[in-house]
Amino acid sequence: MNSDSRRTSGRDGVEVVDHRVAVCRDAAKGQCSRSTCKYYHIPIALPPAPVMAALASYLQ
Ligand SMILES: [Zn+2]
Image 1 (cartoon, helix red, strand yellow):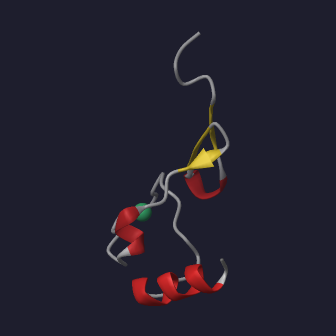
Image 2 (cartoon, protein in one colour):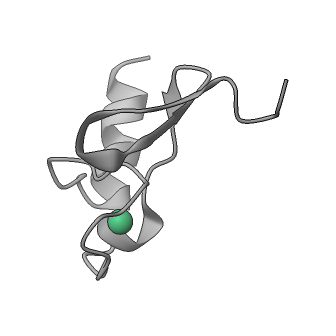
């Protein structure tokens, strides 16, 4: 039994561990230069932080 036994490859080579993926921080900044990145690239751009904060407070 090795430590990688729970790892599977998701779509596009994204590494999935325990049904979770790691978000690519480079892609979040639009600076990921890896052609086959094992981290997840969020398909839409997140709103700027002030907008996120406003949405979070609105949803409470
Ligand atoms: Zn990436």
